[in-house]
Image (cartoon, rainbow, N blue to C red; front, side, top):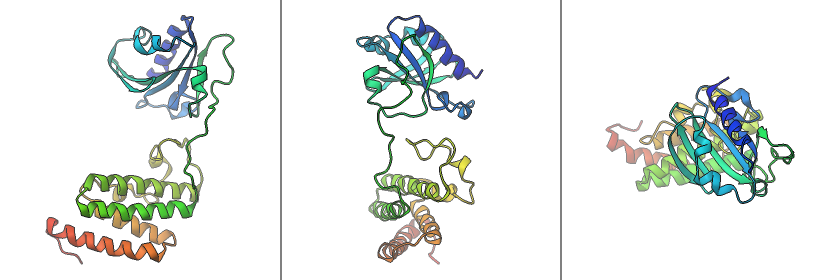
Length: 264
């Protein structure tokens, strides 16, 4: 058994002895999709408790530390904690009542342990999974083009970090969405983070990430490459395509003195 699953079972054994715990749910690679689990996986779980017991499991960590010493712990959201065990197992968990669980969007949960009489629908989220308001090729193409345009203007303004997040982040997310629509759902797609496992789904000749995400100092090169990549595959409207070409040329001219290069 992998160390993270062993730790989850150890936590389950501790919680099973507590009268105010209803269930322990594994999520992510410790959830229903155990085939995702490898030596780099962290441990995500929900502790489902009775009404009035939530603060007991958030404020006190004796239950968490019984399987092994915790080297570091901090609150990362209301009702949630992240912790690193001394042996390297990293955990992220939330403590919820049954009523609160019904308000949380999640997928792929697995019952690790539940007490007799616990509700049987604990792995079913009462909330819809996050989806873009429009999930079409037209939308994601236009979203990519618009964010390229805005990102280049931020680069020209000198907001290089904001530009990098837009061009090499949001635009690449739109590219991934286009590939998903063209080729179908990828195995184990993370609905909360489109970047997860894309390298396993799309080889470099399909999704050339090294050229699309070259780094902080290469926003213009990234924008140029992504724009050309889009133009080869999709009908880019002239109304935004022509201004983008001109913007890329302008950004090239602006950047060339800094780099000591000439524009061919």
